[in-house]
Length: 492
Image (cartoon, rainbow, N blue to C red):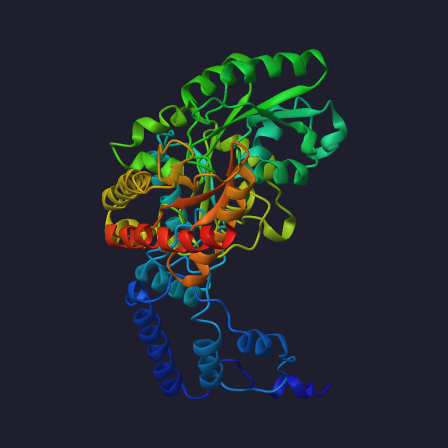
């Protein structure tokens, strides 16, 4: 008989050699993480990575020999934990990012411990994700039979929505023939649409010229009449319109398009109606804010991020599709080695692999399932409403500061403003505000972001944070004038 290969007789493993010691280290990890989160109000909003830490990490060689769990954890505490981008801070107002919750953190740990493979399979993880998707469809006003899939972020959720739209409305077999199998396809959105739209159309093989950007009005909402005219012009030129995108909360200033009017337009033109609700869709959880996103429930697909106004840790987003069969038709593919045998581990098939391009998927749904049940969706909606009220009050508060001008309406949670000293040109004000933004961030006072509104540089204060208290906004507001005054004096 052939001898057994030597490696077959070894018992090597990556599990701890001393479970008690690792258990103690794991408890320390949990305690340290909770200690850090519980003291965020006392810390700077952002701490830059020190040069010595940056150099140390950049110089690390491939670690071929063990350093040990405890030693590596100590390196994490000193070199990594203190130096995030600040998104957990109650004074993080830059971009629309999530801040996470302690329960969400623990849910991610539990999900990693289960290490569930969410292509589908006959297990509890699949049931949990199905339930979360069903909850979200109900909350967004879609039918109970709608499909959906949890994704990494808003870009990928929107990408899937457009991919289904392309399959449903191209007029030819895109899966077989590719994007060159017919005329140029066209997708319509406002000039304020997030950059995901161009990236996704490029990734889908349609090209950036297929993104038809439509002007907006003074409220930064899309001009529906102009969109209708553009669709007619493109059709006469030989293009094939397939999709209308409505924004529920634009990234620049939080504007929401007239979603009912866009739904009417899509229906009249036989186009797919997709809503980018990356953060704004969740305004529907607040009865007071729900009218802002009225019409979203008529969409063929909706993208939303639960790590934004769902307050969960990264990454978890969702695409919802009104016609579940259209979603399956766009992606379903079952090779022999993934066939459902009717019983066993794969019974029921690979439900989620048939709804998108990914086969391997992590257990994102657990943190949503636990958080919705533990906190209650109404409480989450109340904090969303609180954020909007905070933004509107903050806009009124800083508008009273001499030298500050509000640059756009505040329909949701974003305040765009700029320091405008007397005697400064527009270009000088742009330069001043760029420098003011950086000094606010570098001082640790707060983390707003910068952008352009009507061709001028503005500072964006975006409140998507369950930790933000009015005292945090007062502290920020009080700190603006001293920093701006120094910069103004330097520039004069």
